[in-house]
Image 1: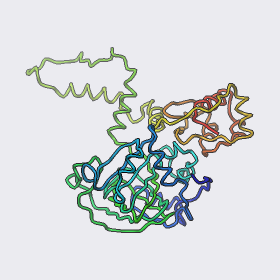
Image 2 (image 1 turned 60 degrees about the vertical axis):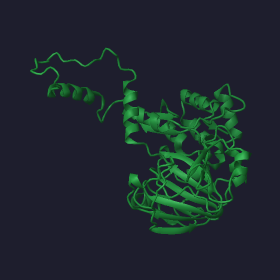
Image 3 (image 1 turned 45 degrees about the vertical axis):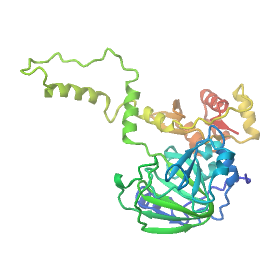
Image 4 (image 1 turned 135 degrees about the vertical axis):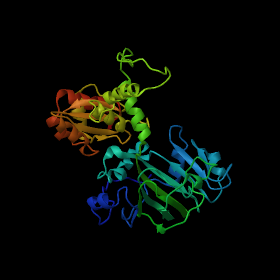
Length: 386
């Protein structure tokens, strides 16, 4: 792997982040030429292939043909035998969560901090053989596609997508009929932004590598189900449906409006917009990480003093495999880390989350003993690393 530097850039070229958020975010696609000027891929195709052979890495190969059926996906871990059986054309290797396995790549995702970091999903890299593709498809999330090496032709369409236009034999959202409305050939450093639901079709012109910065798109069903599960986990079983005002009914099997009203009142008690647990639940929910790839430090520290000494010589950073967020309270803040919450001062939470690399001197000035102990715990559990 090439030496990785951290040249944080504005990936929008001459466009301001405000213009992008006002006019494009979740509204319409845009191609930005040389968003990452003179970009040189820090990960080679061979290194990506080797990473996909590891058991814990989320990887897959998509074959347009020569598989068990068209657009056949093969899930990792991969092996030398699998690679040697691949045809010369029309297939792609995709690896998710690259920033978690290679923290040095976090500068790429950090370039998009004008979007709330807790919305970020992962950094994905795909290698494509000549004519390799994952087919014309849609995603339900926002994605920035950065060309890393070689060239790819991208076609998009904003036409509505119907269920009967999906290829049935594959779990991928491949479109049977696709009519391009716009088309570009992307070269290293070019970037395409796609909001949810836009049909897109990328085909590699020769071998190529591309990076995708994806943002979470949680379904309403998951949000409602997860919140209900959270607020009901500790409810007493003694709380039951009751009807002391029940009247005699002409038809015993009839569900009367008064019964539905009692159920409505139960729902109102818990599913209120200002529910006292909403903030805590949502922070835990969006900071919960889907990939458990953290590694503990080679040597755990026994005291805050040891941590301070370490920070004098080595910079500390939030590990990109961990998800940090915070929410302001009246006189404090709730800090969320990987689905857990901690009550801290607002100034401490802001400094801890301001940038990936920690300004330890500034944090030390405002942190209480409890907050410094929290940083020590986060370090010993791999959520902060050096």
